[in-house]
Amino acid sequence: MKRYINKNVYEATQERLAYLFSEFDNILVAFSGGKDSTVCLELCLDFAKNHDQLDKLAVYHLDYEAQYQMTTDFVDETFRKLDGIRRYWLCLPIKAQCAVNMTQGYWIPWEKAKKELWVREMPTYDYVINQDTAEFDYDAQDYTVQDNFNAWFERKHGKTAVVVGIRADESLNRFRAVGTDHAKKYKGRNWINGNKAYPIYDWAAEDDFVYFAKYEKPYNKLYDLYYQAGLKVDQMRVASPFNDCATATLRLYKVIDPNNWGKMVGRVNGVNFASIYGGTTAMGWKSITKPEGMTWKDYCYFLLGTLDEETRKHYEDKLNTSIKFWKEKGGALSEETIAELDGKGRIGKPNNYSQKRTVTFEEYPDDLDIKDFKSVPSYKRMCVCIMKNDYYCKYMGFAQTKEEVKRERRHMNDTRTYDTLKKRQKLNMSTPDVKEMSKDLTFKSPVYNVEAVPIEEIFANAYNPNHVAPPEMKLLYKSILEDGYTMPIVCYRTPTGCYEIVDGFHRYMVMKTHKDIYDREHGRLPVVTIDKDISNRMASTIRHNRARGTHSIELMTNIVADLVQSGMSDAWIMKNIGMDAEELLRLKQLSGLQELFKDKDFSRAWEQ
Image 1 (cartoon, rainbow, N blue to C red):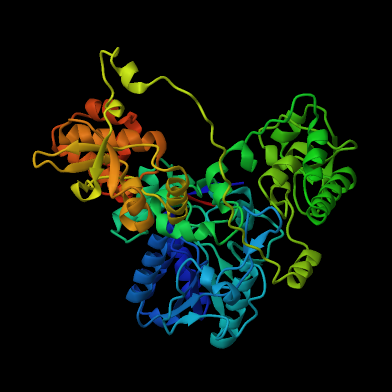
Image 2 (spheres, rainbow, N blue to C red):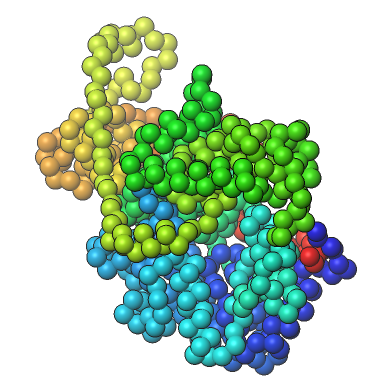
């Protein structure tokens, strides 16, 4: 139960830091480059400076290899300014959680055997720890590796508090880390479990940006792009890109970091699928539907039947364990959830781990109409696990077993990466002669006047916000090689007689960069022209892209700024570019998230 106190979260955190720096010999900050860990690092850094205790401070970063370039740049910039403080940058072949691959629950970054597939080069600073220099076990899950590193650090430097940027409002599991009675509390303090300290446990996501604004602190500018992409503050994650927290927004990599995205597609099997369907029912997120005429139990066993034998048995073991647990022991549920059950299940006394009453089910539920869907068992929840590739069934409340850890060790090298391209069937359709048809049209579309224009007379515009990642560019080349140019380039004829591209830049680049295409087409591109001023050309480019392509958020922001400076009204921009009012507001917010929170106050602190 939360008990609010007469302090804001910033004031309460200062007291928590004072306790940590007085109680422990070392303060080791876990820094991911995300907003919460940045707040922790900056708070600890200021406290250490103000109290002449910089010698106690240390920081480490676990590098997942495949992460936003902006995050890597921010971590790099932050580490550089921490000269004189103990720094550790971990680049290790760990087992990182993977929610995009159906056949296994992890992937291995920085694996030497796959160096040619690395998303980027490994940093070479003297504070980097790799598999050649690590003095602790790294053949394990990422959180276990961090525990191993922390234990090694403590053995080497003495009593250590590891500061972790966990906020209780992020998830029920994180709330439990602070609120449960059976956790290993340090001297009765709920916000310290063993040697892990959570000094900002009661902060809200908005408090992070209030802090950045009030104290003018640096933060990862990826969050500004997230905001402009339409995400709410509590949806913004700077996580390992393939874990279950990140797959719903994996598609943003195409928009924000197309170069790294192209390498990620070849790095881990299932990435491209997750980017397309992450956040949809195909990934099992949120509400899903079953085929007509099937119960959820029927559908669950149907899905199991589509898996290979080893994977199916893995999920069946999890399901059977859950059925047995809820039949014999039962789970602790809130009174609100028990009331929603409306007589379903058998209610018992609280167990040794909670004050809540337990509920058992003689017959495993097919589905339950419960607000807290993840707190009760059902065949529907198991369907969600299978469909979202939740290999360890965390959605069902499972943790990884010892046997699974052993099995991973046996299959350490059994990782596969697949690059697949599916050929599309061509549809042959007979159509009337377009020239004859165009004679009867009052409005004549530009497509009826295609010209063959030498590529030397064509040039790109300076504002196109469309990006195509390397895999898609290869596919575009393949398409043009096999099928020829099936769509003309849209251009504006300049007063000097040259052609400025409005749409079709990447089709233009295929000819510019491939001699075989240039020679076959005799150096000429199919072009149609439109006669519009610069503002309307920008709008036309964006309309083409929004209907078909992927945008660069930064360039879209610049275009909106240019249109506003040109005197275009919000109504004109929304009508001609196809934006709603909220999207336009976000793209006009050039000064970042700090500006939005500069006049807001911290929330109230609470204790458990």
